[in-house]
Length: 70
Image 1 (cartoon, rainbow, N blue to C red):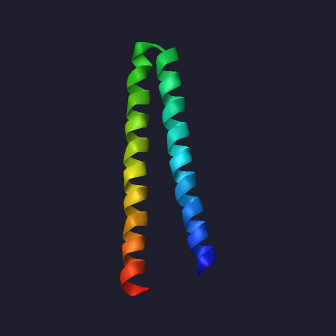
Image 2: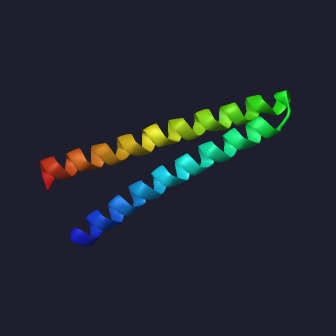
Protein backbone atom coordinates (compact mmCIF):
# COMPACT_ATOMS: atom_id res chain seq x y z
CA UNK A 1 0.00 0.00 0.00
CA UNK A 2 2.91 2.34 0.74
CA UNK A 3 4.38 1.82 -2.75
CA UNK A 4 0.98 2.53 -4.31
CA UNK A 5 0.73 5.83 -2.40
CA UNK A 6 4.25 6.85 -3.48
CA UNK A 7 3.47 5.95 -7.08
CA UNK A 8 0.27 7.97 -6.88
CA UNK A 9 2.11 11.01 -5.52
CA UNK A 10 4.76 10.71 -8.22
CA UNK A 11 2.06 10.58 -10.89
CA UNK A 12 0.36 13.70 -9.50
CA UNK A 13 3.67 15.58 -9.52
CA UNK A 14 4.31 14.41 -13.08
CA UNK A 15 0.92 15.82 -14.12
CA UNK A 16 1.68 19.14 -12.40
CA UNK A 17 5.13 19.47 -13.97
CA UNK A 18 3.84 18.45 -17.39
CA UNK A 19 1.02 20.97 -17.20
CA UNK A 20 3.35 23.80 -16.22
CA UNK A 21 5.78 22.84 -18.99
CA UNK A 22 3.04 22.72 -21.62
CA UNK A 23 1.58 26.06 -20.57
CA UNK A 24 5.00 27.74 -20.65
CA UNK A 25 5.77 26.20 -24.05
CA UNK A 26 2.46 27.39 -25.52
CA UNK A 27 2.96 30.84 -24.01
CA UNK A 28 6.41 31.21 -25.57
CA UNK A 29 5.15 29.97 -28.93
CA UNK A 30 2.20 32.37 -28.72
CA UNK A 31 4.53 35.32 -28.13
CA UNK A 32 6.84 34.38 -31.00
CA UNK A 33 4.17 33.63 -33.64
CA UNK A 34 1.72 35.68 -35.63
CA UNK A 35 -1.50 37.04 -34.21
CA UNK A 36 -3.41 34.47 -36.29
CA UNK A 37 -1.88 31.53 -34.47
CA UNK A 38 -2.18 33.11 -31.03
CA UNK A 39 -5.77 31.88 -30.82
CA UNK A 40 -4.63 28.32 -31.37
CA UNK A 41 -2.16 28.51 -28.50
CA UNK A 42 -4.72 30.18 -26.23
CA UNK A 43 -7.06 27.27 -26.93
CA UNK A 44 -4.29 24.79 -26.18
CA UNK A 45 -3.53 26.53 -22.88
CA UNK A 46 -7.22 26.41 -22.00
CA UNK A 47 -7.35 22.70 -22.83
CA UNK A 48 -4.31 22.03 -20.63
CA UNK A 49 -5.94 23.88 -17.75
CA UNK A 50 -9.14 21.86 -18.18
CA UNK A 51 -7.09 18.66 -18.16
CA UNK A 52 -5.29 19.79 -15.01
CA UNK A 53 -8.52 20.56 -13.16
CA UNK A 54 -10.02 17.20 -14.16
CA UNK A 55 -6.86 15.30 -13.22
CA UNK A 56 -6.65 16.95 -9.80
CA UNK A 57 -10.35 16.31 -9.23
CA UNK A 58 -9.96 12.63 -10.03
CA UNK A 59 -7.05 12.29 -7.59
CA UNK A 60 -9.03 14.08 -4.87
CA UNK A 61 -11.98 11.75 -5.44
CA UNK A 62 -9.61 8.79 -5.22
CA UNK A 63 -8.27 10.07 -1.90
CA UNK A 64 -11.79 10.56 -0.55
CA UNK A 65 -12.77 7.04 -1.62
CA UNK A 66 -9.63 5.57 -0.05
CA UNK A 67 -10.40 7.43 3.19
CA UNK A 68 -13.97 6.18 3.39
CA UNK A 69 -13.48 2.63 2.12
CA UNK A 70 -9.88 2.04 3.06
